[in-house]
Length: 390
Image 1 (cartoon, one colour):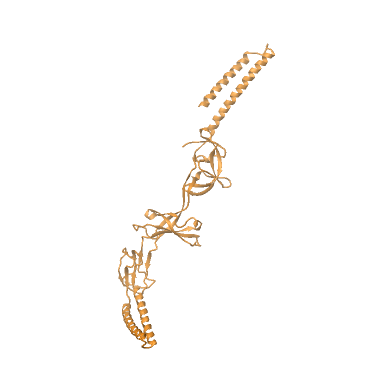
Image 2 (tube, one colour):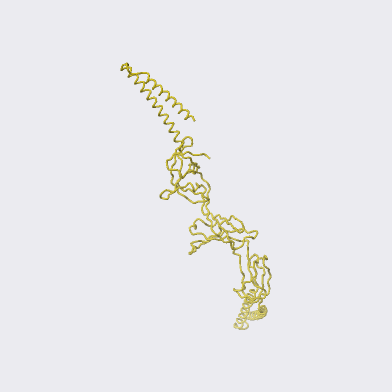
């Protein structure tokens, strides 16, 4: 406003001076005036003209200043600063448990007893089922009798042999019969133990597939499934290019859409083998399952932190532009003037990882710089702009 008043004042002064000059030129004729007086008048008029030219230059400068500020492009800008930045990869995962076993019989025979029902919790070592031993118990009783006889014979023969009575052959034969009887009894006990099915770990009986009275075939006919839901994990295959960034202890997050559940966890195991078909390696993240809602083979999403920078410079992706060589750049404000006036500077930058429409600047920017945000598409380098404060 002061500039406008100043400009109007000078304009009025020029108009008055011009009128005075015109009036003087009209009233003062040159006829009858000697040369000395004419030179004096000429000098006076020349001085007035020079003074008016100086005032005119001031007016033009004021007009130029007002005109240029009005034509400046309006933009917004933000100040760069450092912040903590975590980058994560997200991949499909599958829920598993290592304690999920379908138990097959080790002995061929008829299923005669089931000690459990579906849904029952069992402890490690609990008896689950019995298979008909087909007379193995009777064989064991007979072999125990033979073992006792062989033991008595051996002990008597040994006492005689210690007293130098009898032959060495009789002693060796008695010892051999005794050892053979021991092995036979042990073998029959091992075979008889296979007729009993025990719980291999703590868990719950998920399904009983065999029925009482059915004939079981080792390795072919399943009896029941036992599952432990306390130790669960999410398993996934990760591309090999993340091998150096994802290690044991890396922070992770597991999302289970079916349960609307998210758990923060960490990678507790990484594979040591690259699958040739898809160039991936296996990772596992443990899960807590206190209510038993998480089941094996549920679909899940596994997010793993593969990069962390505690002092990263992050800017919106929308402010980044590319030149003809596909090199990224941003516009930075420089040469500050009064009334939030600035000059644009095209700054080449090196981009890092992205997250939620933000990108990390590896090189090209420092903290405390003004980066153009709104209006960036209208700019060129060394352009005069005016920053709007939000």
